[in-house]
Length: 124
Image (cartoon, rainbow, N blue to C red; front, side):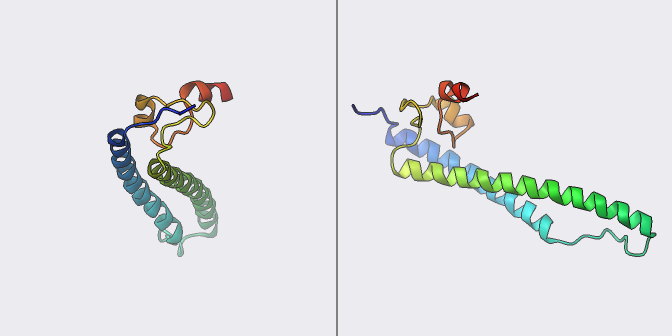
């Protein structure tokens, strides 16, 4: 049984959308990674020991949050790259559970989606 697929025109629309989101996501990831690699001490080297300890704790928490955001962003970039591969393979937009087409509206909002709404809701 042949599975329905999106037309080349539809795939081009999704490819353009994904490439745009991918560019933005890579920029965001670069900013996050840049903030992790810089050692900003905010000029607290000459202040009291207690203040430095509070700043260090705050910096650690902030760095952990940024690291988590960076990890999520890396996963998002990877998901978008995988979506581009599916476009090239002409398997983009096919639900990996049901084999049915994922609605265009969903793909426009979540272009890296691999599950239809029904399949996603069934997972919950």
